[in-house]
Length: 394
Image 1 (spheres, rainbow, N blue to C red):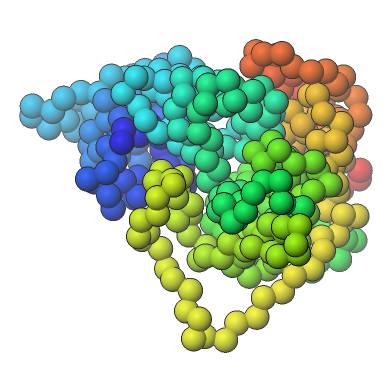
Image 2: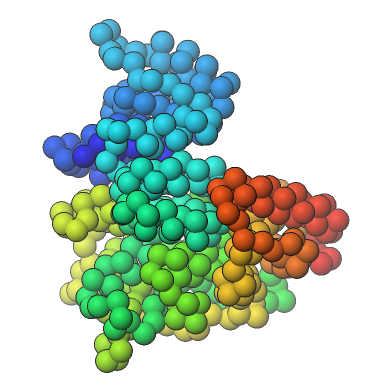
């Protein structure tokens, strides 16, 4: 199986390459797409010898070319080097590619993922923005092309596994678990004094900066609710979130006879990544096993929608439809950036998103270009709102 990895230098990309490393007889890297982390990218190129490599910008491309000239081995076959959106699309849609890992953060990976689906590739989806920003268009493309879209996020991957236990018509609800983040037990009145360093200290997962903040606000779980509605054809009322600090149970599916099927595994992303790559088969994965000889306690509690307003806003945006979820995602990214730079308070992230949703006109995007345009306008509005928000005041 030939594999293209979009976002190869991020945590999901690195884990995907480890799965490839574990199964050299089954997987071969065809394409690597990254941003600006050339230290990691160059080492990946030298180890996996891809046919195609894409980077974000022409400036980065020239620097990559210079580095490879200095490190290339004698007789080494150079990959084709490309930059920008066209490079991402080419790497994802090449005829030789069988599987595409979509792990670029943000809407930057949307077009290439959409085109890979239209080209009938199997896509491992680790990019939340693809469905949050343009779920209707993407799922329409899946139905028309017959492509396989396999979720890689631990919760949706777990749900995908649970749905195999019965007929789709027998399902009554999906339960997604949330760790609760670092402020699960923090009183709401103390959140205004939260620092970026405290918010980045996630108790369970080691992730990128934006997704770590989104986990602290529970927006990440809101995005997962939206994704689940599109992936599994559910209404928001059929997707429930429960706080489960141990993060051992990733998802549960309740069937109409009252049975609940749960997916349980260690917190290691290589398992859902490998599942997406080998589906419907299962292979031994290089992940820790749960030791059932050890005593353990699993806790469950409902989320506090008053304290974590972004989770409520995500449910409301999905119910509203149209471009609301695209605006939700765009405004959140800008607000998180402002918080990390110390320009707004932690609660002001939700306040910025809520105001952007209220002021940005809602419409139904007809094309990916429409989605990108809405995303751009929503970001600009969120920037304006952030610029007049004084830290600790709103």
